[in-house]
Length: 117
Image 1 (cartoon, rainbow, N blue to C red):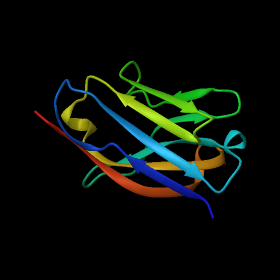
Image 2 (image 1 turned 180 degrees about the horizontal axis):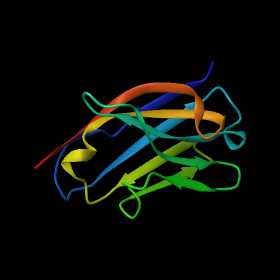
Image 3 (image 1 turned 90 degrees about the vertical axis):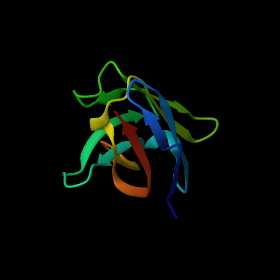
């Protein structure tokens, strides 16, 4: 079974940083893209970032470019999302996702990120 274990959420002040981790299992890591979606209260779910574990290509939503960095450690089957310069509008539940294309297919449990102003 595919399992995606997200961790690293928490409460941080605006301008601060957090690092999310997603430990993956149940599939061949370098054959999938893995990344993050988020959903804020009352808003639609949105794609945040995605990385192809095979070739390292990345995607970032426009509203996180320059502030968030996604990376993967293939030896640990883990993907990280370093989030810097956090804003209150980054407050959301962040979900780790994985799939053969565009990080779509499997979802892990969410981790809550709260950015206070």
